[in-house]
Image (tube, rainbow, N blue to C red; front, side, top):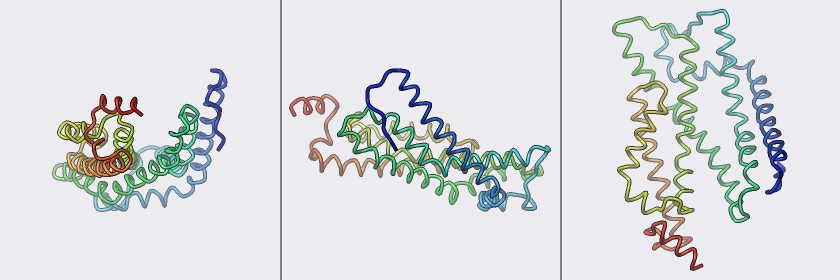
Length: 261
């Protein structure tokens, strides 16, 4: 995919942005149109983890447009996921000219890591979170009322959870680059783990759309695990590149070391 020059007039930058946004929109729409015919099968797959919490195994649609609305949302959702490599690359390619040559070598690994982590987050949500989340939500209602599983409600929660976990699983990428480039030194993150854990708990509460404590706790556990894994990887990379002493640098020490070089 062509990369624009680093210096361009403002109108050329806007033209470049419009071109890339057009590619993104066209890619997502084409994928969504192709996927639309298969949405009943996709919806059936999405419901597999929560089948036990759907009375009679059937969702309800309350309006004439309800079925089309659900299928349209699902096709856009799947279209965005399938076209995500194109979407992410177009976004990265727009900012790529602003990077220095030695920074550009991180682009392809970052692109690959982003896609892999996003898919891992969605898979984790599908296999672990959906059943636990809907099980808790169902238990809060079934004792005093009859659950009428509305298709739009159920599918919306599933899609939001999937996207939320896909985004949350980008944490290792963020932590890795913060430490590798000493934006936030490794020593600071390692020493301030209590504050980080509290922040992760807050993030877990914000990004879980179902307000379920089960979902929030599971996301928190996943984020803490990812945080510790990413710090361990960053520790190894920093030790190899700059020596173990760099693990204890603060920002001033790193700045002084860079000036000496």
